[in-house]
Image 1 (cartoon, one colour):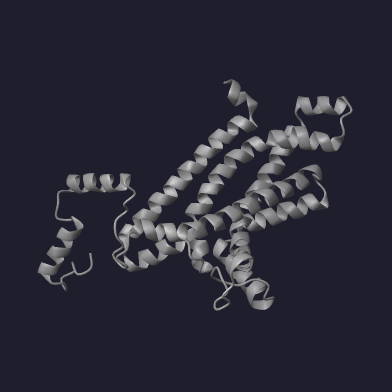
Image 2: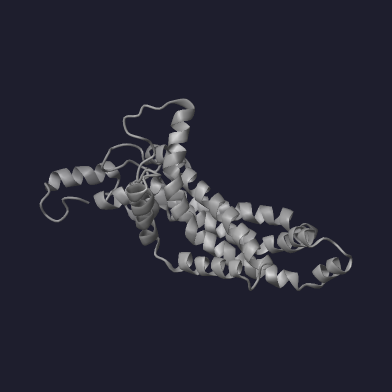
Length: 285
């Protein structure tokens, strides 16, 4: 706590410790904490004096919007890129997609984000570099939504590039492996159109490992928003935790960790449920 280095008044420090319950034995503190946690009471912010739950609830929609947009963009574009690379294996488009995937996978995120701001915001002026709304514009209704989405494009795209590269490589490898399976060769022997073989048999079977990876990536996108939101000044829970770390507001830090942990657990639970629909064998088990 601030003041415990010796510069604070001992009586005031003792009053603060009693007010926060820090003068109780540790087992008692843990019991009270678990009781409050069950009631969604994450404590008070040391810096702002507000309930931590309310502070997180204010910013969580922005984080979910950013992570959701990045997740959908990475999943759709990565799957499409991997599909194109697989059906054009060994050709120019396959090489270009492979090179792009390696570059996006190996490039540091903060460098990609800063270069995106420099190019698309600083040089071209296509997208804003920070925030969720145009300051002083006073937009309402659909114009406010369009302005929000305009601010969302750059951070969501920068966040999606790493996951997009993973999906592209995973889809390509999985589809090439599936294309050599016996049931695919049997479909060719029956005279089925190649486009239907790739879509109905190869791609559908290749969705199994993608589903697992998507669950992992969805949780990581939410848990890893602190860097994205800091670079783009996006007012989400990642930036809230960054500000709380600088102010040593540990109740807020712990609260954000708990919320992101629950989101990661829920995303993995959703993947387990989706697996029963994607893979019929799990329903029969």
